[in-house]
Length: 359
Image (cartoon, rainbow, N blue to C red):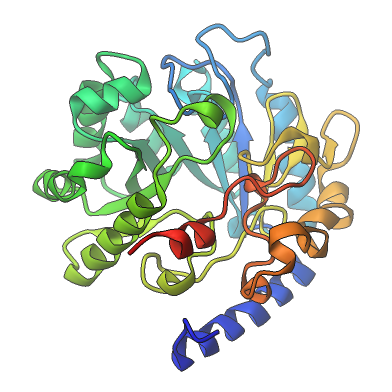
């Protein structure tokens, strides 16, 4: 543990104790609803392989409302954020009605969108129906964002949506950027672009080998590029002009406590659940489908949440292969669930990437 200072070791031990308690208590804080698999983009890194016309029908609002009512019987909905995602949730003609139903029951309503359909009028309608949190993807300057998203108008529409957000009160919002080999080269310039456009909350993440990105080496950062991104985020946070942070996935070794607001924890199945478009119940939507714990069409969601999810809450089964001999297992517990393949093997480890970097 010589790579960590005394302060960081103490912080990691405290975080470890907190995570153990959270797993035991498993209070639900976030519920993702994959309300559609339809999408108006064709993103290179899509984990759901969404298309404009999906073979899977959108989940009826009434079916999801049954889940919300099940939750309300057991806990206070005001403690839980329901995040509508997809696919592209704005392709649902009833998305405002969905938000109204969520808000009416006392939940906090958030959304993840690509911004293609988010006009001023649409945003006002959503806020009027209870929307309180929104995230928009912006993966670089126009050419690279459009390349990533598979649509020549994607950047322009995303920027239009961001302009609408800047003029809206009562809404918490941020920008999410998938950093790849094309964009890693100009992160400082892109940061300055965001600041100059009055964007002050920015989440960055890197591609993990899943979905369309599994074998796309144009998206994967090298070990050295990954470390460069960590140093960039750390310095940007120190400068304080924009609230930049690395996404939740991955234990980051010496960068823990320096590139995001919290120390690493994988909340999937601990404080985070999701309902897939086909009714499957899982942790976060990034986790592979063979880790589903039940289905709302055959099971009570709350019974599943309370009595299943053992693989998510006790991760000793991950203590094999490279993890078994790793010195940070006590803090990492096998990394994020979404980084495990169908057989439980670790597909990617940010900590090992950092250690393997040549500088």
